[in-house]
Image 1 (cartoon, rainbow, N blue to C red):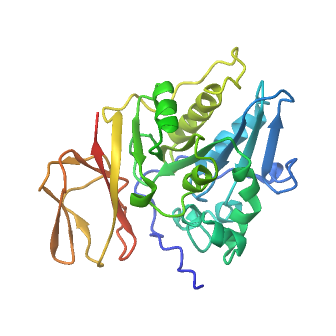
Image 2 (cartoon, rainbow, N blue to C red):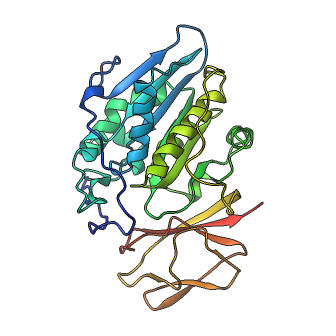
Length: 323
């Protein structure tokens, strides 16, 4: 199989780089037999939760959130908590002059979580995924920490199951919540893989804000602690920090309908967009190969538009604002 290159803009960030990757070498030797994986076991029966950071190597907030748990000696009061620094090799290549280039080594790690790929890993990113797969498979519930290219509000993303909806509602999350059927969203997502193994599980992505912002780290820490608390695994005396962002005017539920790829090198949005711009049915939101792209339904919302659209790559996700 020929692996396509990791195709992302290598230009400087449009947003200020407020923090740089910290040295994670002190966390290399965990207690699970795999580098950069740590299991915090209470010794008391309870759920097994896995929290993943660095599925994308340039998304710094997740790594900082795991370091916060380890540095502060935060332990579950029941069950066990596994912390995974995923694509550590990509993370270690970070260059502030090319801050998006460290997203992956050869291919997007969050598009390769399929059993057939993991059995015969054929890229460095897939090899690392295979190394940590057992910690995904063994998890009753999963939180995957991410951040966004544009400075847009945080969001939760999860498969459209009652369990995930119930979790999202119980979290009292003052930011957008997006849900999807697996056949209309990205193939090979980590949370899809986990959900296939555990259909009744909670499998959630938390997008915590812009990649290089201090607020995203604060958001990731706060979201992680609240995730753990939902399972009654957090010491009730522990004071939860505030979220990194103010409550969002875009808060609510969104149903993801489709992911649009650019079909040419001339894809462009009609407006300057960051995400959560909303269009009525029939309104033009972009142009591609000389064609107008029009909203196929009312309350059509742009989710994570590409910073620099690339032919045959994801340009934007279309979601419907529900409530």
